Picture 1 (cartoon, rainbow, N blue to C red):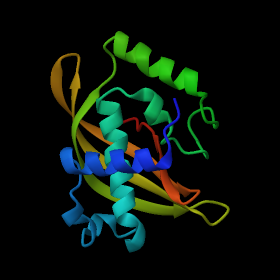
Picture 2 (cartoon, one colour):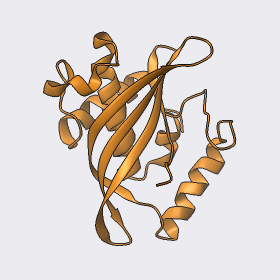
Picture 3 (cartoon, one colour):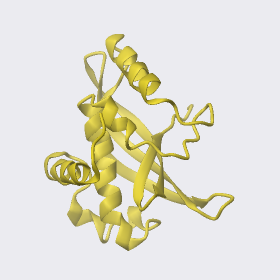
Length: 159
């Protein structure tokens, strides 16, 4: 299912209004967002909140549309839509998928890739439901601007 940009923007705005992520009042002066250019912060927050809202509501087909084209996961390539959706559905069916309930931005770090483009590493505190229990978890995302908009990739950190 393909969602046009206008529909995605409307969904993003609605998500900002109803989900417990970063509020728009925090965007302009939040020091945690300082690595992100001021003109791009509101859209970044919209996309970040949309990402977690789609994950929370298990809308994996729409979540796929937020994946970075420059996907640099374990395989180094962006997964195919069907495989991505199936992997999340399998985790969900097995009860191994942590469902985010609330998230809070902790830190953003900007690094330049070999082409001089910015890659932003996002660190979050996440309250999630895992196997029926509420847990405190960490969220790690990589964000990039591609074709004028923010795209994300989740990654995991071994501790």
